[in-house]
Image 1 (spheres, rainbow, N blue to C red):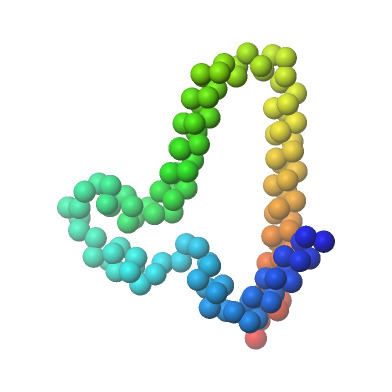
Image 2: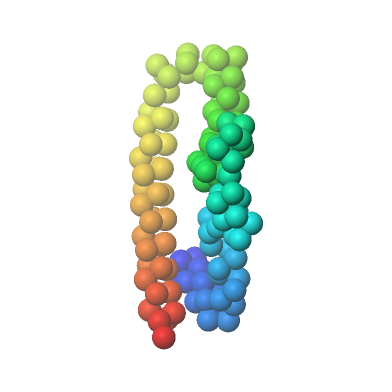
Amino acid sequence: MGAALVMLVVIFLTKNCPDLIIRLSGQALTATQTQALATLDPNAPWHQRLIVKHRRLVGVAIPFFFFQVIWWSSAINYDFWSLFPERYFISITMIFGSMIAGKKMLIVLGNTLSVVSLFSRK
């Protein structure tokens, strides 16, 4: 039911609001970003070069490192390691659950994208 609703919304937006889909495409370069990349000074500070050249990587790395620091700090502070000998099955369950959930999401996205490509052709 949820996958069908997502497909209907995506089809509706593709047909009626093509500009919205382009704006929501995420990592597409805007004119300002293209200009910043073209006019990047080779003598710019390292952090400016990193942000301009590798903005996708930086966009993923910032939240990744933020939550890793919080989790590892909590794990060390509250001694999560002592729970694993007794409750190791929880970790195994979470691994299999995430694999099933990830596969389901890939199936839903694959079906949605195939339907969108069928309806968006001219």
